[in-house]
Amino acid sequence: MSVVDKDKVDGIALTEDKIIKLLITDHLSWENEYEHLLILQEKINSYLAFCESDQYKEIYPGYRVKNVVFEIHFLYEPTQNAYTFLEQLPAQVGELSIAVECAVSEN
Image (cartoon, rainbow, N blue to C red; front, side, top):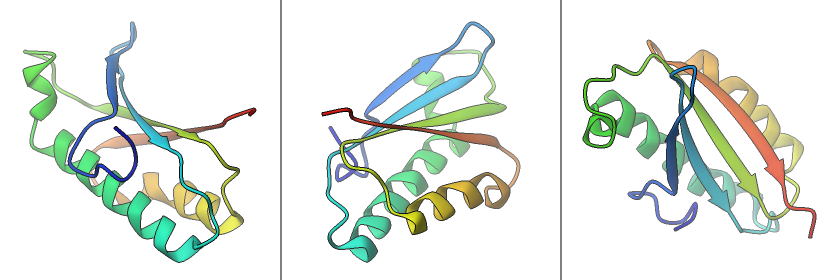
């Protein structure tokens, strides 16, 4: 699974301090930045819907999500516009407490 599989969760974990981490794997180049940002936005919107509709309870029954981390692993270094988009995300998602963590492949 990857960023292009917008209706699938790439990975999910519940940390010891009760934070849900949702993994996004992004293998796309940034040659077509606009298209790439749209694909990433669709994936993030899908993850937000996953949280808001309580679908995570199928994996973690009885847990109420309050804090979520989107852990995005990029194959290629994101553009400045991508970083700006991701920095603005936590302020735009409403009731959920969202954080974004990014990592770029060393290969």
